[in-house]
Amino acid sequence: MTPKEKYLSWMLNLKDKSLLEELKGFDDEKINLRFGKDLQFGTAGLRSKMGVGTDRINIYTIRKASQAISNFLKKIYKKSIKIAIAFDSRNNSKIFANEALRVFSANSITVFFNKTLQPVPVLSYCIRYYSCTAGVMITASHNSMEYNGYKFYGPDGGQVSTNWSKKIQNEIENINEFFDINIMKSNKIASSDFVKLVDNKCYESYINCVKKSLPTLNNLENDKLRVVFTPLNGTGRNLVLKILIDLNFKNIFTVKEQEYPDGNFPTCKIPNPENEDVFHLSTLLAKKKDADIIIATDPDADRIGIKVKNKTKKYENLTGNQVGVLLLDYILTKKSEQGVSLKNKIILKSVVSTPMVEKIANKFETIIKNVPIGFRYISEEILKLEKNKHIKDFLFGFEESCGYLFATHSRDKDAVATCILICQIAAYYKKIGTNLLEKLNSLYKKYGYYLEKTINFKFSSCDFSSKISNIMKDLRNTKFENLRYMNIKNRIDFLSRENLNFKDFPAVNMISFELQDSTKIIIRPSGTEPKLKTYIMIKAKSQEKALIKLRKIEDFLMNMFKNYKNIQNTLGRS
Image 1: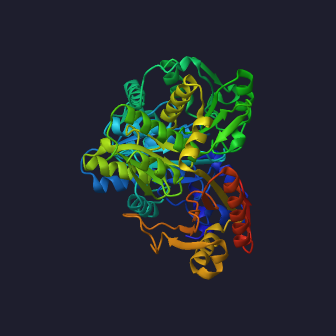
Image 2: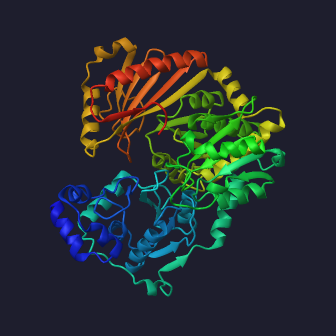
């Protein structure tokens, strides 16, 4: 169907009055924008701005995806199918979750429904707790308020593989959103045998698993630590506060403007704890309360951001890599002190995360494995360990974009559990007269200074996909000698596997340039946004020398991309 034909079909068949009103008056340009393409079901499921159209998140695209999943699961599972559903604090998230519930239950699929908003790690836990076939989380993670999305999980509680995503996309393409979807009437849901509400025992079990997974439960004078916490109007509040209070953290101060769910995110345009600007209100409160640490979680509570008070009582931001280093060092140190053998223990990290953790792992003789970008690759490795009965060997998984997991109760990154562990670590260091910043500096002295930075090249035009594709092609075809002035000694193409020496590493659209001094530049397209992401990883003898290297590489990248139109570079995180 042409965009015009799709538009007319929606005009004729749309039942939702608000969406129908939005459709009226569309000109050709807007028709092409909203109906020129359909949402594609990728490894992260669906994600887009909300609104009317085939390339937007709305009740019809949610229903279509749910019907496609129903059709797909029925082909591979002969036994009864069970799906867990959860939703975050975004506008319309509960509505979309209910639409998914109506489709799955109408297809004779048992649904375990979270009637209140919950974090991503809880959804992952629910899948495992109820031995579900799959799970759905309605969320757009850290995107701005206009977005929503549909994350799909497998029976292990991790996001599904590319193979499953492709098959679901094929099912989607065979469905007409107005005629091929089974929907249970709302008034029948309460009496349906296919609808179950998630029991409080499931949440209590999750909480107990988090507590048991901590390296130590001893009281480290937790009541002395002063913490400012903000869930950024998302899902993190209830569980984080409950567990901290249970563990005797008494001085917890929440940012009132960001404490409760609000899908408009009125105090921060992009509720991403990677961005330092989300800490404005929490920093003001921290100064007022003389807090030791500030913690923020994103709307679906899978990512965490941290600021720490320094000697001058200013609050310094810790990067995702720095938090990963601190978490790993503490976990390995405590395990070692407890007499745990670490030789066969496994640490998983994304290939763009700091190589400093490799140095720390080597010190403890622990195995470390690099995986592609996306936490599903970490969960896939955990699943392999589980199938081979080596699940106890997993110690820690992390990616530089502020995602961490140090136990196997969840199979996606868990900001709730990480909040608790970070507070425990901060309380321990405070007890012995130091803090996270001083500990980090001592690790730099021990292992060398590591500096990482991500530069995002944004695309302003709607035709960003072909532009990014052309740039990646140019990077692959650039004559190697043209890069010699940067002392580049090697180029690794993760798609063609040229010069790739990682074992079992899947083909991904990514290129790495390795310099003579162990510096790396990794370039890849974003999987969810119109961006080209560039990761810089530097090792130097000091911060000053690392910053000199960074300036040189930034100039190199600016020069490399200056000839491409419609690119806006961002030298900080975005």
